[in-house]
Length: 119
Image 1: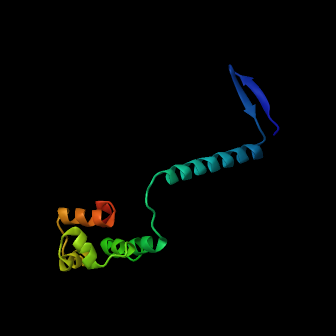
Image 2: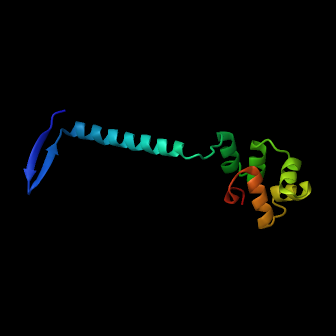
């Protein structure tokens, strides 16, 4: 790499050709991306398959149903885990009932997601 140093006003500067400067910027961005990727991987956070994400975002399906399906639970199994009736869960899942905060917390816990993910 061809570099030149210049001293001006008590500071020393390094001059490099513009194409090398641009390459340094690209390399620095790549290193930031790698660092961010490694940091994200270090966080023990669950990721979801694209099918789950698409159902939640594109299809706007009930998050409870999507996460329940992802966990391979029937309505009855989830209801049992939450201590509620299957019919009540079905009404919450379909939006006919909103469910109490206590019930929604139990559902979120049983599905191993944040409360905000299902409400």
